[in-house]
Length: 289
Image 1 (tube, rainbow, N blue to C red):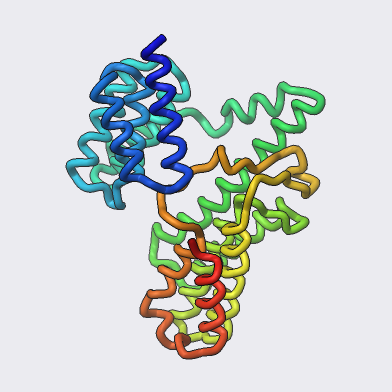
Image 2 (tube, rainbow, N blue to C red):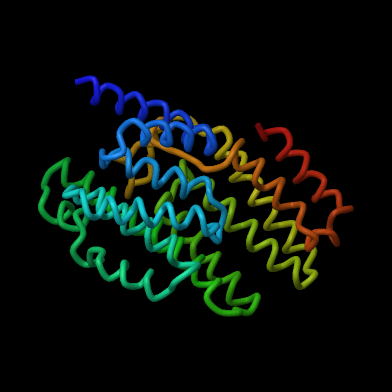
């Protein structure tokens, strides 16, 4: 019983750190847990992800080696499906920057998109439980599609027009899902996508479009900064809820802090003296933590 209580306490402390974006403290917690319970799969998983969260991309060699060792240890010891899936995902991300073939070999060990638990649950369950399963799955699909469109732009040197279209596609499908504007948790993503669009316009010295995209980015950054527990209300997601206690982040502050940091990019220098740009900075500073 003492083991269960101890691990539960480590998990509780870790959750607080993840909610606050305190990666350094979170890593220290799991290092202590691993020193005490090196053979427990929950602890191995916790430490693996703590190292991953604390690492920059590409992952430094020493940290990558530790993540890989922990991931392989978890795959060897664990029979829990979710733990094994998490280990494979983390190994794929870690190997991605150091060994593409190895990353792909782990990707082949993951499940098929066409037979996920979420897909099967949304098919099998009926009534209110079935609607909830469908909405949860739909939200996951839309979010994944948005991230995939965004990721596509990093694979090849896309034109400005192609890159902007990818980010607009991501924004459009999210706003279609949350059709009443109550975007909740995904305000963070939309703010980020608008910021990336602004950078594309900045590279072409299009002042009007750059400032327009930045103002939209600020709108959703402010929404995210003020977000608390809430219920979604759009017809396709109206059984879903956002609970801040279920979220985590790997940065300090909020999305306004991140957008302020992004504005330091030299590509924005040509609009830095404009009144609208000063308005963007002022609004972000007002809501940053």
